[in-house]
Length: 527
Image (cartoon, rainbow, N blue to C red):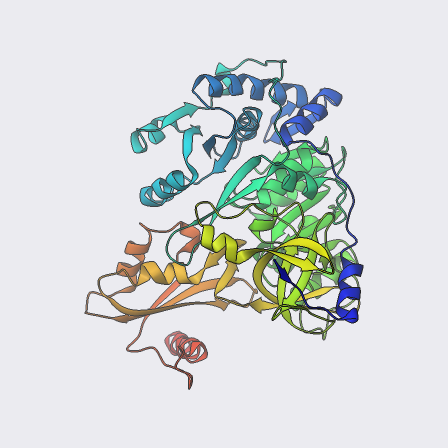
């Protein structure tokens, strides 16, 4: 175990920001949800369009489906693939898996078969729970496919007697991997419980009404669903696949939404086009990418101080790790801080084996019960990213985020970009190296370079540049290859064919020159 070097100044600032112990229940999602259902049986748990389920109804249906899952051979510790469209059925299915002591693995059935087979294999997936059982059976015939059909279920009031331990795995999320192989990130029950219990970044209680906007294979959905259901509040399932501001405003007003999470890109669109959409909401959480100060300042002037809260956190740390309530003007600031660690989470900025003093840049590292145990089947990467240290005589397991930042004198942490080429686009974490890996597989591509560019709205777009090996290299040919390899959110928004990749003096691809050339070409074409 390595010992972290530290100065009095560095230790003092980290001790101050890391006084985050708030306590949280030593129970699993199963026990906590069943406790809420017992205390508030007639309260509305889930809303979807005109449908409403009380806690009694939701719990009873989940109990009934869990019986079917166990009959299909699902036991504690098993992994169950989950693909159900946003609906009450989705929540019932998720709860049923948890009630079996199993782990849910959300996936998108539009992903390529090759990718899904790889994910199921890495996770040791035992069964699939879906509302498209015929399609799933045809595609994955060797796996047990269990249909979700609420009309075939009865409301079973008896909760399974099984007790799930807080350190059991609740769910697995797969993130982009630089070698072309997605990384499986398992998250413990206690990681979710610590996120939504005694929350300092948003009010969560029985009066909470939270819309569920994110795809369930994006970990923001964990906050949206369990933040409501573990606190006796209401989870409002957004009625459409894609967010429209007029519809979002209607959902917010009709249901009395109290808190909402929106990605940075969606936040910018709301601020630009219809800030009144969220006027009645108490707290607007936003994150996923670095924020545009222009949009943050416009939002602050419209909503007032403290209503907008920027949140930050890698998947590996159970959704959110830090928060920053926007209070006072951000004009003239170098960047919007990612803020302070949330409850039961600690943060350290480390460089060259030493704790950084205020103002000194280093790598942002996180600790606490929200940490994943590590990557599925990737022992070397786990050992590299999750490291035990001695910090002032205390043994601390740190997750190295790969994010660069520094602590200000007031304790707030400022993000300064990635140490590698991992980015977030529309809230999804993407490693550009994975896209380049598959781009280089295209038979007609000699070289490729993948980066991001920013639109005027502040939204990031993935841009790929390719050097052709022959005349068959076209943007469409590259797209057609990638669509079979990666999910749609990883597809480049632009693919440009160029004669060569310009290099800097150090021999690296000159990103600025490429983007400048692309901008010049776009300007010429618009004339």
